[in-house]
Image (cartoon, rainbow, N blue to C red; front, side, top):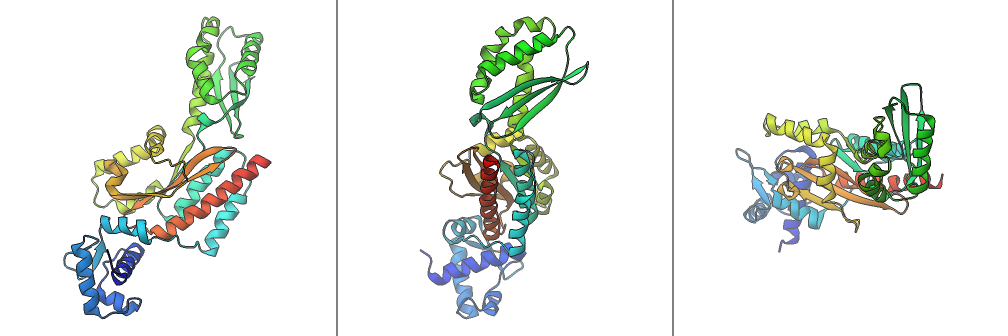
Length: 345
């Protein structure tokens, strides 16, 4: 059990180091005046913290830096979200108040704004589409060569894709397919639609294969696009500031991972917490070798109309946890308000 003085010293060392990245000496703490003790006493307390593996000494320096164990103790027992500055609050609210045409814009802008505010990498998972319902279906001929398949979901998201019109396709064929899907699948969950695509529809639409018109493949491609567009990553370049100890191959692998939305969704879904609790993983707690030099703060959100997702920030182990967490929590509140406004409109 740490004493109150040891807790304060550990807190101040982490506060200093996450702000400027410089080892913290006893003289720094004495000059600051927050620890009511002499330099010798503080050095003794720092030695105890070092023996307990909460801090470690940097070679050729009298200063100390937090260890992974120290960060873990800090986020479990000492961390308090820092209030977001007024100008940053206004920036978040102005962004959320801007005119948005589709729900995907909300999550894209949230990720972009959070990465700019924190200077880390922001990841936002939109509501999972398999919780949604298909509310509209159209096939729109654009010209003699192209048609557009349009799907509308109950989260007000509209997905569309262009396809080549196969030879021999007639307007009555398009009407037959449109009527069938509107009658049998509109109003069903996307889980049911996916099942029908794999099991029932191929046989029902078999006659169209002769004219090289695979309706089920069109539907699946469009729905898959909807699924893939649920993960929004912004500020990947910010990671370059914290990769000096990584080999070039590792850097490339990490960027490839962040570009692969399917892999990211699988990886981050393991962190999804339906109890809406804050989750902070440090180093190897992320259970992926490429993330070992980093920490991840994940804050879930849940909306009655749109479902749930999460907001996350990936940064170095010495990230400013308090201000980052404050920014995420404020953004979460504004995001939920925006989702509610979108639904009511």
